[in-house]
Image (cartoon, rainbow, N blue to C red; front, side, top):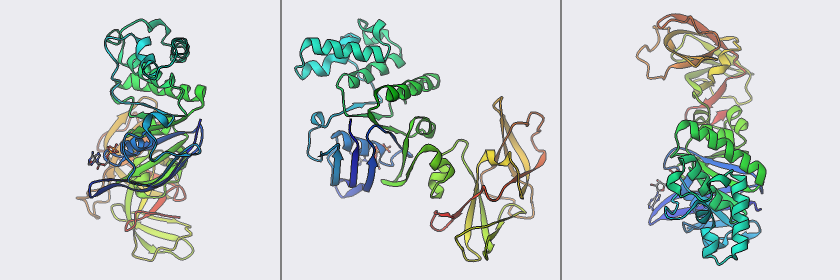
Length: 366
Ligand code: ADP
């Protein structure tokens, strides 16, 4: 078991820097998820932890040890990849034990570790099978087993579920969570899927363009994002963003919305100057509670999920910019069975629940 400290970690490919000084603490035993859009540097960062990429700058500590120049095999980490790359001619048991055999571990030791891993992963019935006689999910379990037998201090997962179909992904997600509970080992998991991040993580690290945007527990990031990027990335369907302008900010802020005939008033510690361009963020479910801020909307489309529905709607206020580029306002409703496309309705929210962001910086106004 080990925690990790990343201090000013940088990665350059030739002249191009792709990781720009990452500082991060990963507590011992925590499940940490790196999430962000494609190309943000998640895999590169993970591969630097694994030792598969050189570290161009900064200090990487695993446990008590600086590992910048330590070989991958000596870092106490084991990695599970998106493609499981099992040896087709070996059985499940042989595949799991292969790494240990290469390291010259005694046969009895290999056997007992393979037994232990196959029990944890419920692979006992398949130990003598070849990979081609397994389902995708079972193959990925074997790949995880290959990591478990090494008794690593840290597990590294690089988008391990991306090749599985949706149903299997959900099932494997639960299994990986259970595995973490059972082993209690530090795990770092890379995904571009914010639902995976929300459901698996103790701690989510949101990355963009080689920098950390925010670190926090799933609900901290959901409830309290620091900036527009995190607010928009975490949550599905995403948070509604409505453009507005500050009218006054004496002891509270009054904002007129651009695409709606509406103003939003609320207390705010920050005192943005009148005229400041802002964005108001409201999550789809916040309309259920209602409140003093009111929007008149026209229904574009209703998505019925069964237990609830999402109404995609546009502002009615034609006087304002009708050819707006703003995405639809998404309103979650538990009572939308009779709602017709094209009909109008009033949605309201509590201004205190809304998040405010400064357009120029993208930062939250608190
Ligand atoms: P992610 O895993 O978040 O999709 P990556 O870590 O794979 O992103 O990539 C981060 C950035 O580094 C991207 O801009 C990518 O183009 C760049 N990159 C990755 N590998 C190399 C490489 N071998 N040479 C040059 N640039 C690379």
